[in-house]
Length: 360
Image 1 (tube, rainbow, N blue to C red):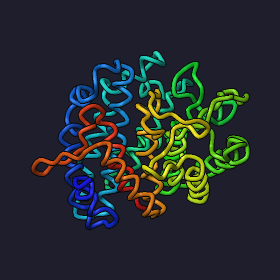
Image 2: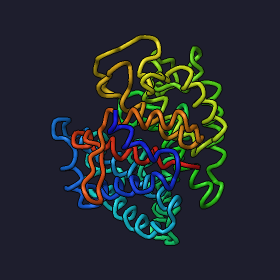
Image 3: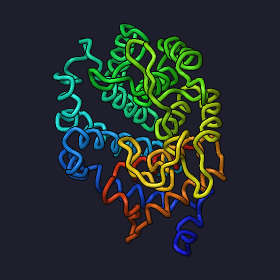
Image 4: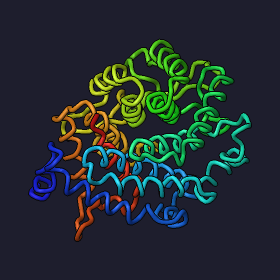
């Protein structure tokens, strides 16, 4: 209890958290701003090549988002953030990293931009990272790629039955993955021109009227690609991530979803996000959330820090960070800090840093 109190004593102010945020940045830089093989090696071998690739991709993307946030919060860090986001984009574009997506679609995502296969998750994450680079840099280095990625995603959305794309062939539409596409297109609309504003509005309107769960009012976690009804439950981890991504797309809708998520999934003692709203789970394992302990979803709790930070909900944000400290246990040595759990899942460290720095 004493350690948790000390570790969370500076939470709540940008200056109070600055030293800890930068030490965590340093830790992630050391492990992720390296080589493609180095990033893959930082992922656990036990999860297999497919998930190693996914976790590596998400780790780079979330750390990139954190670096963009840090550049805005602490302008003196802008140059370093720009350089490191640039290097992360290079790693994600490497054949080594994109192999996880190429293996599932049986073609390379960057060499098939004129084709019709989705590759939605890889392309949208890369486009999001490029939009972040544009945010912190005056360089036009990736402008051509940015335009091609967004144009490809929109063309494929328009050919789909519901404007939604699949992460992998033969599977349902994972709504949080699809929302990254909307994030990239929304950022393009803000940064370049408004050619994609209409398709973003159309998607959000359909989400509000067709893709929200009737019982909870929350955006669904899964959709059928063909638009038919899919009886899959709303999940805390997916809802929390949906709320975070929506802050980039439609702030009003994001706030509505955030308030509903708190009503449905927020547990206050200890504070965190439950993975299941309709049943208790004191000890279990979930493929999306990880180990469930005391009803709480590890990934859902981490993702919820993002929208709590964005909407400056200090009580919830500080409570979630306290729970993260209890579960994760910060280890500090020199100019580096990280949760001990990062030794098993580095992606969680990257996610938490992106979420806790996502001020508007």
